[in-house]
Length: 173
Image (tube, rainbow, N blue to C red; front, side, top):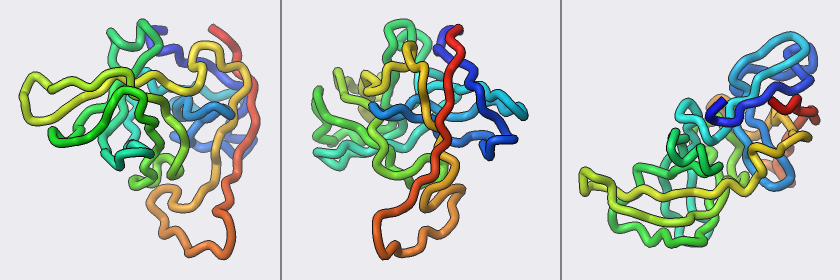
């Protein structure tokens, strides 16, 4: 498809739930968009159906990463709703904000390629190059547990927050 979604060899019988985040060692790939008992379909960050709260690790500027049909053709995505006075620059690294509970905090999303003024003149938007190889991902991890998942109160950890993930193999399409 246009947004490089793919099927993995894990499903609800493996403990996976709808909308669980999908990552590689290089960063965020997307989320579980369709769930079966033994397979799942991964929707990628290239799709407009994927919305991820993001923050720049160097400037602190925030926005929403979502797909765009034109950018997806080049393996890129976009960050929107960026404050007009933001300091975001090409090369800035973006990580998940973790505010909504849909994605764990601090997962690398990608790097900013360019920053432009929205047509409305109110805010900025940025072209983002994903850090994960979206089209070439063959081995991914589904994150099934993390502090703050689904908006649950994250307890103050005594040590590093624990994330539970399940390895899966993608069936290229």
